Image (cartoon, rainbow, N blue to C red):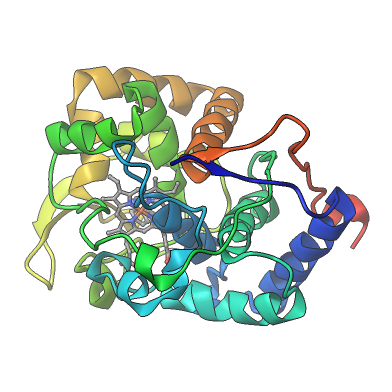
Length: 289
Ligand code: HEM
Ligand SMILES: Nc1c([N+](=O)[O-])cnc2ccccc12
């Protein structure tokens, strides 16, 4: 059954939540070697949405079920508990906000505060009980190539262009060996949202290496950057490569296309009545804060 999201508060109320998250991000910017909480908040908003299955409309961001340990402890989500802990104080400060709205608003706030595009965000997700937690195993694994990535995103009806645009979020943050068995990049520039992921993929030399967890990843020693096999697949596959080139050459196009597919991702399975209008948030900077 489709979920219907009714808007219960107006934009000023959600801007207040945005500001609380953004302020806390500023206060705790030394987290994870000065990457701050932005990247893990973006990954959390994707993981809570990536469990959606179009066949029975199970999973997805609506019910906020990530708060239950079965979903939180999915081995493919290791490390996201840091994002959940970060949002706990926000959850307490705004008890009227549902967990689905909290997790997705966390990602939107993080993207905007890391100089990314403006993401029009719609509210009204409603908490669902533990019985609605989707099974583990719905999130993608990093070990495989283009065929795997393409068939994985079939479940969302995403086109090749949408998949490439969405994966540009891997400009943010890093892989941590103890979380995923992948490691790097080893630089501190990975908390600015830009089209650099595509640029790096195209322009740098990538050497396949077996890392300390025995997994193959693609490294660029000069810059200390890395790519997962699923990242590198976008370079190897000619159909994906076309869009990698487009986004490497045009950051505005990337921002526009990322905004569209990320919004699709966090709203999958939810019906928003037309009176439930998207909220457009100002960054702290735009508010002179
Ligand atoms: C083929 C699909 C994908 C795979 C296999 C994948 C895999 C991974 C892996 C293995 C990590 C490292 C986790 C760690 O070791 O801490 C990671 C990090 C990350 N992923 Fe993905 N991912 C995918 C798609 C996405 C999407 C669609 C988004 C957002 C729109 C996203 C956002 C992120 C971010 C921001 C990080 C950095 C997190 C941090 O710094 O803690 N990923 N991903
Ligand atoms: N920063 C990253 C890059 N990168 O090119 O900077 C590539 N892939 C990644 C995969 C997971 C997490 C971070 C990544």
